[in-house]
Image (tube, rainbow, N blue to C red):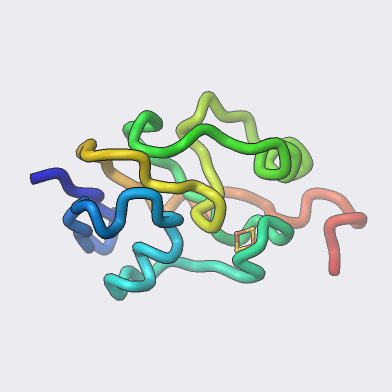
Length: 113
Ligand code: FES
């Protein structure tokens, strides 16, 4: 059995066929994980998370990379936007939701709505 564990809440999702290919935010919400989010459409950055096993997710698309750059967050695939990151397979991983508290999602005035 593969799982995605969310810390610090210790919520756990069993990664079964029904959640592979699902966006991490959707899978988390479906399993009542207390994850912060806003637009759910790759424009606010509120859903930023850090994952211990980047291979558990599909690679980033240009719009996600662009928003992370705009937020001044460097990533090697470990920092992602939960509303864009899709679960890719049966891999155990840990998602650090406390990372959401460490990022200024409005680093520039032009990020304000
Ligand atoms: S919820 Fe806004 S970027 Fe993910």
